Length: 189
Image (tube, rainbow, N blue to C red):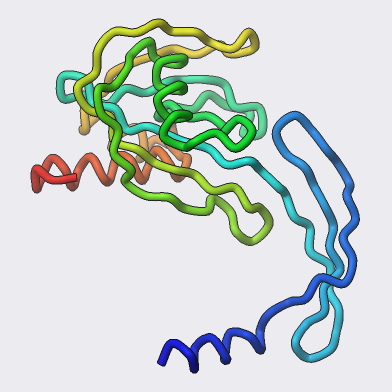
């Protein structure tokens, strides 16, 4: 069955005819690709390249550690779990540990991968690794010079209310809240 599926998917594959770099920034790059469609037509694809990111669902005394910060693309403050981009091929678990301590001032004795997923596969290749952090201990908060964030520990009820209010509206944090809810119900992560 798998071989048949692979043959079927091959007929939908888009072959790159030309790739034009458009922008190279500190975090992302943008390219415009011309592709050949299976029926012979060509199309244009705008692709954002991203090094990937790691995020952490960290529980402290039964509460979720979150950060609140202004998100310019949304023009509003957001409450999110700690997260950040991978630095030059960095191991995602190391990035998760680094971001947790840098943003919240806590370290985790243990990190467990919950999921890895693509954030917006229609136009970007960013892969985000979501970790569960347990047995937190004080560390040292070290914000980037352009970061202005507030750290808070919230209850599950607060998290659900923040989702309803739109104060939590990013996929990684919503996914973490639902994983936390499942953990609260089952005792397993």
